Image 1: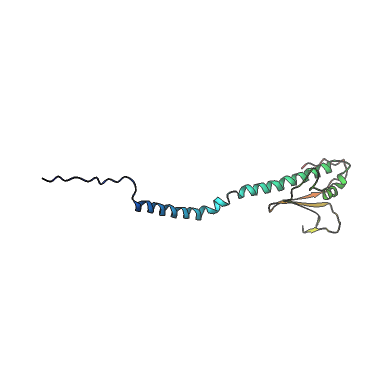
Image 2: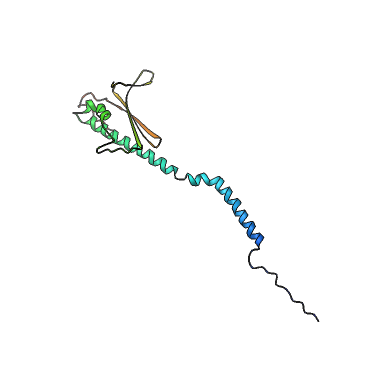
Length: 157
């Protein structure tokens, strides 16, 4: 009499072909993921840089406007407020504006149609256009000399 031995056909683990297919499948999924999400991963810090640059430009504009309001509300200087803002050095002293921030100040006039003309050659007007830029973002404000006497209402901004 012959005894037949039953062989155990259960596997423990993956076969070589299953491992290779799993690696290939993971590589394909990884390529698809990087193709569609790659720029989101590499440029994910852009909103932070944009906010930082916009905030920097706004901060410096607020400093200039604070100086303007102070000049306009001081009886001894309100008549020369725009000239003082135009002449002030914001890159030194208590201001120390960083090199990455640009400041442009120009006297401007407007015709009846609203077209702006930048004055040059030392000419002045009652409008001073101030532009502050940082990282490609700019903030512009028009400062005007509207008070005629120190008895006028105080300027609030």
